[in-house]
Image (cartoon, rainbow, N blue to C red; front, side):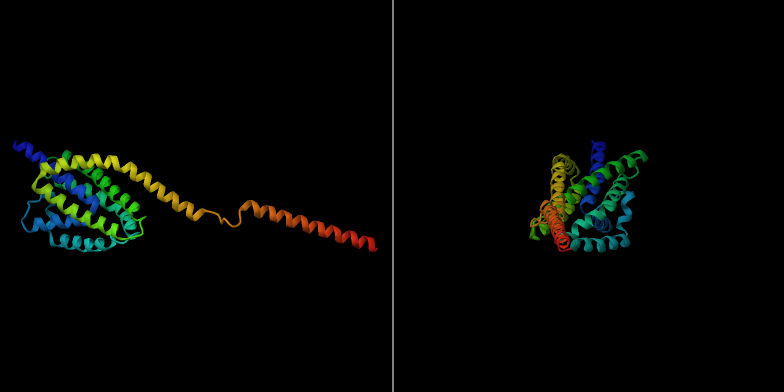
Length: 237
């Protein structure tokens, strides 16, 4: 039973930190660092560095920046695009570190799975923000951002104190993510298609066919005028 609890704890810790990193990396690092520094939780050897005051300070500063950037429509999309290259590898590294001294193979496996988990939650967050930002009012954006921050804090706290409950929650979340991501992708493609049509549509007042016909008629009329002038000049001579 003790071995089973240890396995569940390792899974909850490694996948929990990867799950949280895909949503808000700096909030996850800040929370783990503060809890480790205050003695509220014993961090695995691979994550003890998070309780260093320098790491806590850097994570706190970046969390403040993200707190405001994440609530401005449009800016949050750019922020998410940049953090595709930050959250995913960081989630993999933190997941590998959360395994502790079990084995090198376990650390590598946790890093691979953690990177996939961070990519999934990040894609879900970034994709939903693209669709939310099609609404002109900012309230939905603020609500989504605050909900994500609370979810990271609550999810990590559950992973640390109730690992079995978190694993059950994580299984349902993965199933929900598998169901939602294709729908989000179709919605995102529809948004970008609408933007493309908006910027590439031709003016409706003067269709291309009418312009060509008008130009042809103008050229024919000029040719007729020139022929009439030549005939009149020939008759005079």
